Image (cartoon, rainbow, N blue to C red; front, top):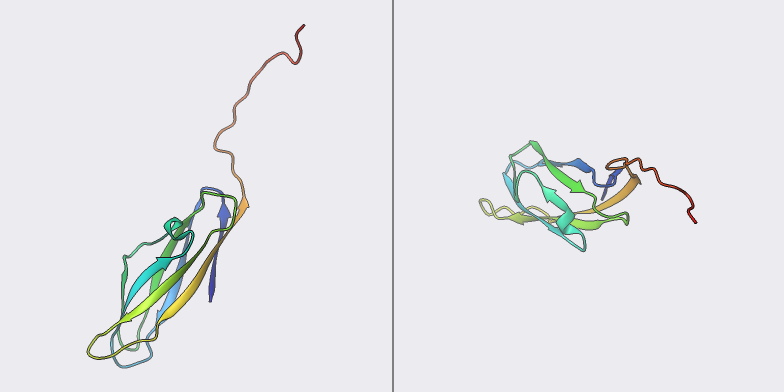
Length: 116
């Protein structure tokens, strides 16, 4: 699964990852961001995710672009044991794309084009 973060240079984009628990037991995960550009992504709710039985929850992943090149990272959700129950390890590929560049400021200058 790939989650794409598209926006302007230096803009912050937030995406939600929805997780469902179809079982009758509570699942708990440690969320980890790994990869070349993992520092540009962050998890807004922290690194622990708990999904109660027959429920769903969402994880908010935030990305702020610093460079024009695409950023890449992987979101790993590693199951923690809760009452002897293990969930499957989940992985999501995170990729960014800079769609536009907004100017930070506009400066007007006057100067002669040519002087002897």
